[in-house]
Length: 535
Image (cartoon, rainbow, N blue to C red; front, top):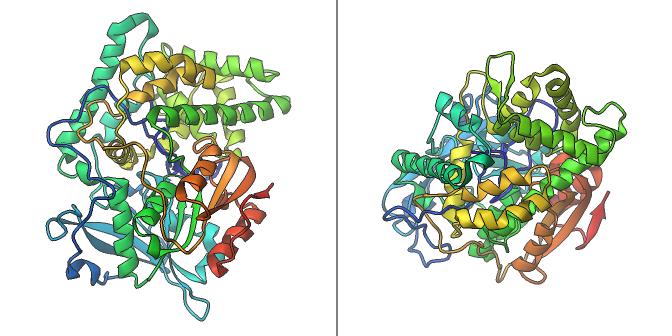
């Protein structure tokens, strides 16, 4: 099972930049929403826009008990406790918004307070996935938001099903290792029998998740998480939601705006998901986006004169394709005793394409694999992407990612779809397409299915302009998605700010032009003109 792509969404903007931070699609592993088998009995996701009863007073009038934060749990990604400026609490929300007086769940929260005359209110942040822990991520990324910290309480949460918010865990430890080490695609020599065996493995994964978290799975939709955001807005005492969402967080923010247009505050959607395509279209577009980013990296590598991949782009493509193919039968050893398999190598390469800052490390990893016959650096890149710690534990990113994606989408491509689309995927990415087309089976046998593929994002009645920010060379959320989101939100609802460059995440890249424009939008309500370009 390839875990390298967030083919349904986009993973997260906190990408592997060559430093110590883990990517939030971070990892962002997300198989595409698809699959041959229908839903298991009794499993239908809640409609996004169904009329709902009012929330009970115990929900809207609650006051979180803010206190010192502990260290992030394994499900959140582990690490040290944040500093004393950070506070943590829990938010109570209904599991089922159609029955708001029934079962509830607690969502983990984190915040830092703004003090003094500059304070505007609260800014809620989501870093993508779906599946990224905001409680663990926001304190770790605080240096990227220092210009906002004096004016806003910076607030984030673990969305429902993520981290410490009743995080979904289907596999852990050695079982997760085995799943991520497994084949990226069926053995072509095995023919139809091998393809059916591969599909059976996907179904077995869905059955295991249904056993572990079946009762919660129908409620893990983006629409319900958007309703959670609105409860949080109310509990924070805000009339409008000021919001920064990256990657999948752009879909979440757009859905909230569509559900609650009169509560839209100063909103930034960075690295924007395309809300108009079905599962196959989204996966195909992202596959092309990763090839574009890979070609940009390889072109830079060969221009440096010491590239292990060769002397020109064509030669470099062949080198990398041959390396990945060779790992199907001959995985590389590593110092820790684990093997770099083909699937882990694909993940490591793709995780290194989220930021130009990771390119030098990818070059060292390819040199190590080619010249030394070792896979330590590529394995480390895959572990960062997959959220694996040094003790062999995992964040619940992957399971939450699949749970949300599969609840959000109606499409269930089957083996016939994979066969029909194989040539298109390989054309979109001559290096990666033969692996990524199999992610169309990512929801085979999943016990929850949505009634639609496209989220409801048309905003009727908002009187604030939403700022969209997109990078032309973004691999995970290709640029055209932002253009389509602008149109889908409705005429005059959004302005698009473009960063002409590479990577996933414009504001968090530190580009001064983007930083100034986004800060002006959030701090003063001054939105850049639609079509503004930063280079």
